[in-house]
Amino acid sequence: MTRSLPDQSLGPEWTILELLARGIIDDSEVQMVRDLLTTDTLKWGELLEQALRHKMFPMLAHQIMSASLRFDVPTNIYMHLESALEWNRWQIEVFRRETVRVAQALADRGIPFVVTKGMAFESTLYDSLGTRYMNDIDFMITPRDRDKVMTVMQELGFRPFFDWAKDARREEISSRLNPDHLPKLAREIDQPGIRLIDIDIANSLTWTKSPFDVPVEEALENPVEQSIPGMSGVSIPCFRPIYQFLFTVLHLFREAWLQKFVESGTDVGLMKFGDVIRLIDRNQNKLTDSELLRIMQTHGVTDAVAWVLRHMDETFHTHAVELLALEKHGNEKLLRSQMRSPGYVNAWSESMRGRLQSKSRGSVQPVAPAHRGS
Amino acid sequence: MDDITTQFEECLRRHLRSAKPNPINYDVELVQLGLDSMTAVAVLMDMEKTFGIRFPDDMLVEGTFRTAGRLKEAVQLLRERQAS
Image (cartoon, rainbow over all chains, first blue to last red; front, side, top):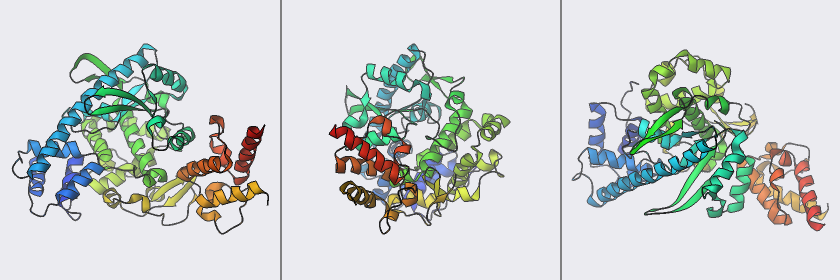
């Protein structure tokens, strides 16, 4: 996708992260990042904090290493970034082995599933550079296999994450009220620097009783086999590109649109949009085909997809809405809304860019009382 | 008002903004009183603590707390089960 350079009104630190999130595509962007990183007014504390908040620390580190800025960055910061990148690469390696272990166990029992998000994107969208940070390993299954999968996971040594949570009962109640995922699972491991492996298993592309959803059974049909870097002859099933796109966009919509994610500060992040931009860049032919529009219309998710892409275009100067021919879609009222509870929406008037940069999103109050809506 | 009603309403008022100044209408959906998915968890936990009960898994569904009336019935049922 073509894109103009971002305006720098939010400061050099934010501009660097916006450029990295959407992916550096030409020499002018390489030069811009380089210039911004070496500017005298750069606030390293702000840059590092925002990079951490947006899970971009390894990506920032890689950019600085690959641009040979060793002597332009304060020594202690450079060394720390270098260690963080190495640690992330190590974690990805450990996660790859665990992904294969779980995938083989599910496949052995004939359970349909795919690997999603970070582990699926790390090699296909981020070139296995070790720059894509991930908290956990994500899988998608069908709702009917929830119990079977839980049994398999327990056999593999996983148990509900409640055991490690600060407030176990809160986690448990929350998980029961939202059966679009299995309870988060974790396993203790004995690897340098990594104590726990978390696995997140979803059984919906969005959320329980969502008015915007694509049947997971349909999305899991005809998965593509994706090889695992460094593991010869081993592959994992992932969504085919159209469903990969739909899942990623609808998942972002879920976290951006549902008020509960805003309140917990886990709603939107630069890299969530970065994944969508790269998915479109690398699968343009498949996504501009009429099949995507047909599937979106069949399941009534066009407005939700347009919500994400319109906010993305406004924020990152991309042209996704035009590229996917969605100019006539998207509902203004929906675009400026936030769902509080099933059936109740609030008006939301912030810009996505301001929201992404804000460090206190949970304190933002709705601009109007909730009313019945989508 | 009996004891459980006073405690029950105090518990709701602690979490629901719109329930604070007004008498609680037991037939109105709690979302209209300010319940969202985060406060739903907080309300259920508070009910458990206040009444010394534990909602079993099959009661951890939206229907249990759709209205104040439904939620109070669930609390009473669990208290009775516990007493017996």
